[in-house]
Every structure is written in C-alpha cells, then in structure tokens.
Image 1 (tube, rainbow, N blue to C red):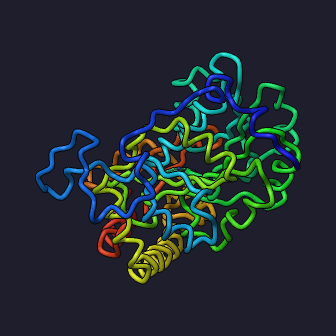
Image 2 (image 1 turned 180 degrees about the horizontal axis):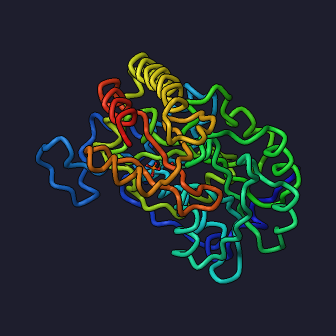
Length: 348
Ligand SMILES: *Cc1c(COP(=O)(O)O)cnc(C)c1O
C-alpha cells in the first residue's frame, strides 16, 4: 500500500515550524573541545547542568543496532504514553477525526482520545480476544486516522493473529499502531521487521516492562522516516531527560541481565498458570504471552478483597467488557509468587 503521510497529517502540523533549541543547532559538532555559552545553562558541573541531547542519539544508536532499523525510524518519548499522545496530536484533528480501539484493552487509548477531543470508536474483541477485522473495517470512515492494536494485549495477555494484523495493514488507509509493550515475553516476533513493508505501520515499545525501567519513563516509537519526522516536529525539545538517557544506555548495555530476568518471569508465569488451574474458585486461565495472567474466578470482587487482606494487590478487571469476574495478576519475583500461590490455595 502507498501512503502519502501528508494526506493524513493535521494542517497545523504540516505548516508548523518547530522550535529550534540551542542544542539542536549544534548537533553535528564534536562537542568535547567547545565552550558552550548558547543555552543559558549554569556552567558549573553537577553532572546534569547541561540540557540533554534532544534527539537521544546514543540511546537510539543501541536500539537501531539491536533492532536492525535506522535511527531516523525511531522516536523516543517520556514513556509510551507520550509517544501515543504525539500520534494523536500529529494526525487527529480534534472534533473531526476518529480513532478505533479494541476493548478490552489498554486504557490510555481512550483517555488520550478524550484529552485530544478525538472520537474513540470501540470495536470489541471477539470472545477469544481477537480483532473482528470486518467489523473494524466497516467502522472506518474518511475521518478514521488510527487503529490501535495492543499485541500482546493488556489485560487479556494474548497476541493478535498475523492474518488479522496483515488484513488491517493492507486495507486501512490510515495508521495502524501496534503497541508491543509486552513483546519480549512472547514467543512471537515483533512486527518491527515489517516497517519497511508497510508505510502505515507504527510500533510502540517501552522500557517499562521487560526492561525493568518503568521509573525512568522511556517509550519508543518505530515507524517510517516520514512518520517519525512528523512526530519530531511536534515533540517537546527535551522530552527525554539526561538521567533517563543514561540509565537506558546502562541497561541496554546489559542484555544478559535483561534476558535472564525475562526468562525467570516466563518460567514463573508458567508455574503460576499450572497452580491457578488447580485453585477451586478459578474458572478459567487465559493463555498469556505477557508478564501477567488473566483469570476468570467465581467472584472477582470477593477474591480481590481477600487478597488485599493478605497484603497482595492485583488488578480487578471485572468491569471491562468480556472480562466479567476477571482478575489480572502480574508475575513477581519467585518469593512473591510463592506467597501468592500459598494464599490462593488457602482462600475459602
Ligand atoms: C504498561 C503499558 C505501556 C507502557 O507505558 P509507558 O508509558 O511506556 O510506561 C504501554 N502500553 C501498554 C499496553 C501497557 O500495558
């Protein structure tokens, strides 16, 4: 499919001249020997007295190498939440355009739609939590700019079938965002390998889950250079702070640690799933490819309260569509999971 990004970009964004920061204008210099008197910073060293790199090139270089993409196909944000917000602000005209999301799913798509005064058209997942592609395509109109797919999906834990995703990528003339926050816990490959194939494909990932850095707020957007350059025009100049960039680099340079933690979480997840199947009040354990598991129980509110009493906090998803009496349990460290298992077995 051909996609001219200009046809779906908001008019004000197209004509926008981005703010040019002091640091932007000197990005190509070898900075070590230079005297910087351009940005009104305090010259005394604190370790962070200088503004951070607005393009986060050291972080992007690692991500680009690891994922075999160009740095110009990456945008970083203050968590995925900022990345998702930038997508709304770049492509969705308030009170005119709409987006499609597929509940039960991550709550931020709907919140961000509301914040940006963009209609959120909801098309429920099927009962096995797959996209209902024909219904989605029927819901699309000329003002539909983005379809949000979360795969593996939060809170259901499953990935969407390749056929559904491909059909949407091929037939929808707007942007398809695949939120891969949990991709590292899945056996499935990331859709990243397809970004050169589909100009309307946008992938978001995060360092908040598998990479163990929720506290630093670093979200990643991979897309065509055309999409990334639109997002770059509207992002706040210093949206990823220096401490975040440093911590991200340190962590990304320790791939073995990350790999081991992911392996442990997956092993613990499989263990927990086995135990849950034997718990008397558990009615269904949904297949999971994430670092959590969704279970249907006899009475979600009751079981949630009982666990709180024991000092264990889980997420009650019973009010979500298709999730009646469902609880979402995040995988902890082995000691925590052992306590959870012990308490689950004792509940009456
Ligand atoms: C946790 C989560 C994120 C992560 O958001 P950050 O802002 O990067 O912490 C993104 N998408 C989904 C579906 C999530 O569950």
